[in-house]
Amino acid sequence: MMAWEPSKPLVMEEIEVAPPQAHEIRIKIVATGVCHTDLYHLFEGKHKDGFPCVLGHEGAGIVESVGSEVTKFNPGDKVIPLFISQCGQCRFCKSPKTNLCEKGWASERYDVMSESDTRFTCKGKKVLQFMGTSTFSEYTVVNEIAVAKIHPSAPLDKVCLLGCGVATGYGAALNTAKVEPGSTCAVFGLGAVGLAAVMGCKNAGAKRIIAIDINPTKYEKAKVFGATEFVNPKDHNKPISQVLHEMTNGGVDFSLECVGSVAVMRSALESCVKGWGVSVLVGWTDMDDFAARPIQLIAGRTWKGSLFGGFKSKDGVPKLVNEYLEKKVKLDEFVTHNMTLAQVNDAIQLMKTGDCIRSVLSVALQ
Ligand code: NAD
Ligand code: ZN
Image 1 (cartoon, protein in one colour):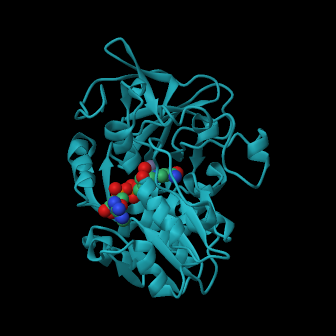
Image 2: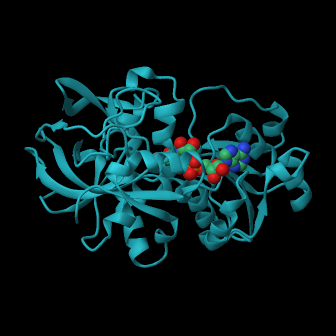
């Protein structure tokens, strides 16, 4: 599915996918989710140089062929392509403090959001690979440092969500916020990323999980993942941080912004209790500066950001798949629509209007 230019519907095209070169893997994509970051690039981002491209970065598939020097993958392996690589060699991979990898797409090109070193061509034109992955395609080619081999019995139409949204929100709560047992948490935005953050807070043992969204149809789902209270900013004529301070005797211990709005980021920080409150930015935006009063941080709050939930990708994703198979992590409950790749524009529309959590598109028969 081609994104020829910003803000236009995607178009089904015949794309040439070159064979994998040394250390590369050609993957037959079986299923892919649609994430808000795809919409961000198509409609909101300011980098028009990221086109034409093939969108999609939340997929799962099967190894079709491998390039030379690939020793750890074989045709037939079930895999998840990763938009955060893990080379294992760079100083970031060697540090337990971060999941950024120096050799990956995201360390340099996240502002443009497309990988220039692409294996795609269409009508003689070079086609960029979105987030280094491009899962809205029957085949894609990814370097082996950005591919996770997963359990052979994993259902690809569910575990694809671990390629982005669910891993992101879940890890933001567990790895980045480090939510503590008995704590009070607030999650802003109840798409798949926010709901996964709710699930992370619950699995970390949080006592109160306050779910915040301007779309009240999301609350029922949030309950399934462990939310205990619901707040609609539209029901209040005072700042949402004040509402949360009143509900919690001075603010929450942890807040997670899963919307991608600098105004909400500020509210999430200001909703935290002074002294030790931690607020994590998960929503994606690179358009505007954000603002806050310095006293918010001087008074002991911490502001952090989280990319892919802080998971080292090649290590973390197969473990998450196993946790799903052991029923420790929910995935099925995120899927509200099953469609085909040809219906991707409908799936994009559903996310725009807030009428879905995740649409999973089948790309090829399993
Ligand atoms: P989504 O569109 O499904 O969900 C966003 C939710 O936010 C919706 O339910 C919407 O109603 C709600 N919302 C909008 N404005 C709000 C407001 N003012 N207050 C409260 N809620 C509001 O999107 P998603 O796929 O869940 O993604 C969420 C965000 O996470 C996006 O910005 C996406 O780009 C980002 N993201 C970040 C990473 C990362 O690694 N950091 C990875 C994946 C996605
Ligand atoms: Zn995503």
